[in-house]
Image 1: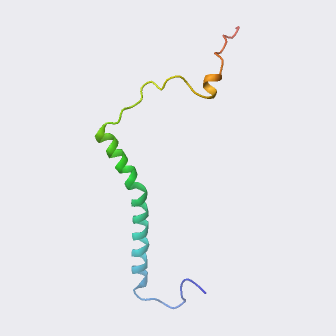
Image 2 (image 1 turned 30 degrees about the vertical axis):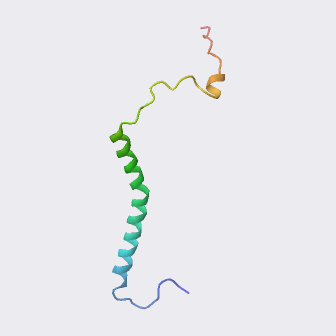
Image 3 (image 1 turned 30 degrees about the horizontal axis):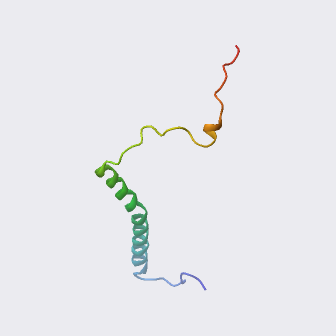
Length: 71
Protein backbone atom coordinates (compact mmCIF):
# COMPACT_ATOMS: atom_id res chain seq x y z
CA UNK A 1 0.00 0.00 0.00
CA UNK A 2 1.37 3.38 -0.95
CA UNK A 3 0.52 6.82 0.30
CA UNK A 4 0.14 8.26 -3.16
CA UNK A 5 -1.39 6.49 -6.10
CA UNK A 6 0.46 6.30 -9.38
CA UNK A 7 -2.47 7.87 -11.26
CA UNK A 8 -2.46 11.56 -12.02
CA UNK A 9 -4.60 13.46 -9.54
CA UNK A 10 -6.51 16.55 -10.48
CA UNK A 11 -7.09 19.26 -7.90
CA UNK A 12 -5.83 17.36 -4.87
CA UNK A 13 -2.26 18.74 -4.63
CA UNK A 14 -3.50 22.28 -4.03
CA UNK A 15 -5.88 21.07 -1.32
CA UNK A 16 -3.23 18.87 0.24
CA UNK A 17 -0.64 21.66 0.20
CA UNK A 18 -3.13 24.01 1.79
CA UNK A 19 -3.93 21.52 4.55
CA UNK A 20 -0.24 20.89 5.28
CA UNK A 21 0.42 24.62 5.45
CA UNK A 22 -2.56 25.05 7.78
CA UNK A 23 -1.30 22.31 10.11
CA UNK A 24 2.19 23.83 10.18
CA UNK A 25 0.73 27.25 10.94
CA UNK A 26 -1.38 25.86 13.80
CA UNK A 27 1.60 24.02 15.29
CA UNK A 28 3.79 27.12 15.12
CA UNK A 29 1.01 29.19 16.67
CA UNK A 30 0.69 26.70 19.53
CA UNK A 31 4.42 26.98 20.20
CA UNK A 32 4.94 30.73 19.85
CA UNK A 33 1.65 32.18 21.13
CA UNK A 34 2.37 31.35 24.80
CA UNK A 35 5.90 32.75 24.50
CA UNK A 36 4.67 36.01 23.02
CA UNK A 37 1.86 36.19 25.57
CA UNK A 38 4.24 35.70 28.48
CA UNK A 39 6.59 38.33 27.11
CA UNK A 40 3.75 40.84 26.78
CA UNK A 41 2.49 40.03 30.28
CA UNK A 42 5.93 40.44 31.83
CA UNK A 43 6.56 43.76 30.13
CA UNK A 44 3.05 45.05 30.84
CA UNK A 45 2.98 44.21 34.53
CA UNK A 46 6.68 45.03 35.03
CA UNK A 47 7.76 41.91 36.89
CA UNK A 48 10.43 42.62 39.50
CA UNK A 49 13.95 41.65 38.53
CA UNK A 50 16.10 40.12 41.25
CA UNK A 51 19.14 42.39 41.54
CA UNK A 52 20.99 40.57 44.33
CA UNK A 53 20.65 36.78 44.11
CA UNK A 54 22.17 36.31 47.57
CA UNK A 55 24.88 33.88 48.59
CA UNK A 56 25.83 31.17 46.10
CA UNK A 57 24.40 27.70 46.53
CA UNK A 58 25.76 24.25 45.90
CA UNK A 59 29.31 23.83 44.67
CA UNK A 60 29.97 27.55 44.39
CA UNK A 61 29.44 27.92 48.16
CA UNK A 62 31.76 24.99 48.91
CA UNK A 63 34.73 26.34 46.96
CA UNK A 64 37.49 27.89 49.02
CA UNK A 65 38.75 31.33 48.12
CA UNK A 66 41.63 31.13 45.69
CA UNK A 67 45.18 31.72 46.95
CA UNK A 68 47.49 34.23 45.34
CA UNK A 69 50.08 32.71 43.08
CA UNK A 70 53.76 33.09 43.88
CA UNK A 71 55.13 34.61 40.96
